[in-house]
Length: 566
Ligand code: BGC
Image (cartoon, rainbow, N blue to C red; front, side, top):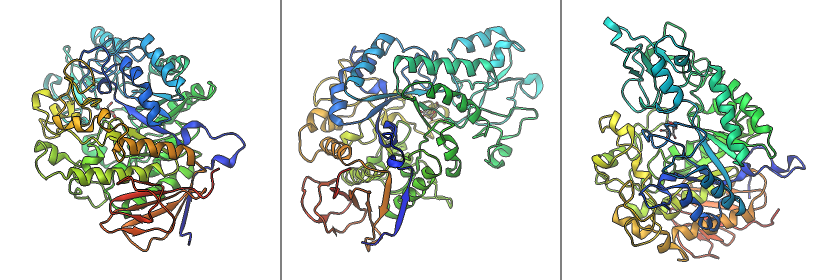
């Protein structure tokens, strides 16, 4: 076989030390309010996670990442944190957290928690103090308060727009305005203020001391800002090069914050890990993934790509090359709590692309807006492609992030009424952006019951009846089910793990990708509609249970066992 390309990151075997756990981990994202509801109030909780520890262990994940479970008014699904060092009383207590951590650790599962440093909740004690203390006070210095413009300061200081739609400034009772890049209930923090620097170090230590293994850092690219007057307009901001000196995004000086965090992480044994959620151009990703910064960064390129061989191949080669520039490993993601689930994306027509390759509209948005009727969703095709893409991803070197429910083959939920929606992007865009509630609907654990086994009360977001067919109970032990496929794939992956290299093999077809790992583990994905013959017998297929054949069916990934195990 001809080696046509060789991409590699840092090899686990470069040193005599065993590779750190995070380099090639499978990390399962839990959205706690929608995972399992132990106390029967319709909202998932920490004890619910503990009650499903055996499920996570049988699934075979290496780690879980918990989206925020902190006290919150839930203006943005918990990403509006009122107290970074406590548990939302509706979700449990710190004791419940410790019990959950022990239960997961006892099963060899690491725990990563979400840290939200760009903003806090308007209910945070420091923001409440700032409101009370009034203009010009030291309390307001912790946030970004400015006078308005126009007669009586009635217009915002600038025309900046928030990520969820509408202005990025909100006016308080005494007439000043504060900056919020997300919802008005999420005031941005002033990272020039030493209090936040100290406070976040305390928070990182608080969770690390309890035994947490790592942190996912929310909007890691936005903390530091150059807010010297005069402030630019939105058009000027948009036109500024994103070269590290941009006024509000991806500034080089954000890494001073992370250098301090790195000292904290490295003061633990083993060092605590971090992964940056940084939506920046790919040449800037290595800054976040470097050993002196957060150490690893998400790459969302697979998530943005269509189900297309050429796009997948480009994404993989490019990101392995990027990871190789640092001593980090790559990350892969197909679904998370912010996007339309990949089974659904792949069952809808591919979105139109802008000249830079980005989707012109958020994939699945039109379909969501129509309540799930237009364009028609091909559920079976989407599910089949999703399983193929997942197996393609799980064979890659680096760490893979799974989002709760994808192992059940769940589709996005489109039929949520306006009155039931929770996402601020829905409200702030006047319904133009339907929001992210459809991927946050509580999981179906059983076929029956008021909440399909999620809990004893009606769930905080409605579960459509089709979800019963995807229930854990319905799939467990059933050959060919998506759940059993994930379980088998994760077990094989653990057995077959090897150095972080990948070699592309020729396939003679544009719609088929074939790669090989250093121990001979091979992964073949057919994106198109015709079978593809392989020379060695298949050990795992994404589309059915047949093993031992030498044919990979359409829209299917095959795994071929390693010729040797390391
Ligand atoms: C999180 C979102 C959240 C936003 C603001 C994101 O990147 O993933 O769910 O709405 O940050 O915190």
